[in-house]
Figure (cartoon, rainbow, N blue to C red):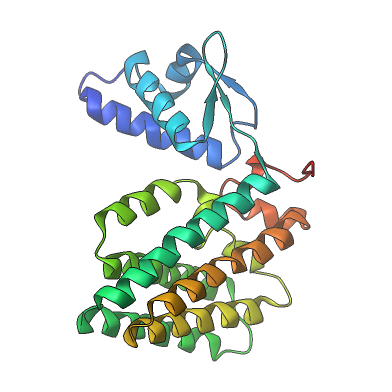
Length: 250
């Protein structure tokens, strides 16, 4: 069942990556029960790395422990996703404020303007293709990671990385849902203006303004979420979208 040429750490890493992908791609259904034995057989690795992978995914929030042993694939409500987006906005708001108050380096600010210019180039087109969306997502992820670097806070960087292991919480988590939406160009334009305003506030050392702008910018994902949940095809484009339950008890 195991590959004797692989070390235990490499087997654990492989088990973690493969199992995470099975969950996020919808190949393991919400609330599906998992045991070390069945997962080990499916992934063709020993039970020890599978045990470590299951524990790690439970820490990330993709699995939950079952009373009596074993795990189940986590189901997320719309409210869960909303909370995750708000929490990311809080963390990113702090990174923007720290960047403004501590003073981002000219090199990092120049890189931010390069990324903004690259998105401007995409948005000059009347229609945004799927290839443009992929390019936008790459640039968007670079921009948000750059803000973390600007904050000069290892603690915030760790919390951001931990938070965005859930695909719903990542800055680009719901962007793909807009690929075929009639208002796709508008949504990307609004996001771009948010990027531009935050960098301006950071350059002017306006900490409170930078924080407020970044928190509001994160809330654009809530609009994308609502659109995705209303369209079966759109939600299928979201990594991990199959884990979201669309009915919320209020």
